[in-house]
Image 1 (cartoon, helix red, strand yellow):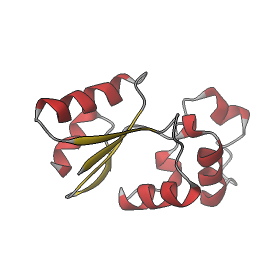
Image 2 (cartoon, rainbow, N blue to C red; image 1 turned 45 degrees about the vertical axis):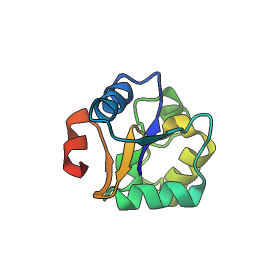
Image 3 (cartoon, rainbow, N blue to C red; image 1 turned 180 degrees about the horizontal axis):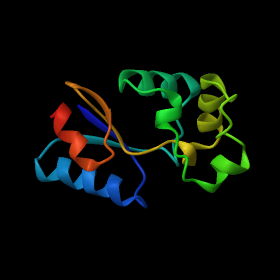
Image 4 (tube, helix red, strand yellow; image 1 turned 60 degrees about the vertical axis):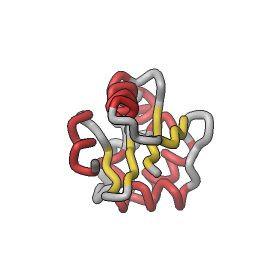
Length: 114
């Protein structure tokens, strides 16, 4: 089963979901703003995608600056805590397939795990 961690307001997330649907891939859609991931789930998702928490956080979000998360002294645990508390900070879309996990940004990254 393929899972997409989806934000319907995000153009890239919508594009990736459409690509999955166009291929007829049965997809579990997790709207992570409605159903936030736990700290452990976030940590595992980010690790399985081969990323650091800093690479997985949405730095363009106003809240990122408000919380001072750009400070180089903010560590990985603090970044994961911030994403767990404020799911809007999680970059998107993450996609999990039988071939791996990727942050599909840009959308063409999806091809790596199909």
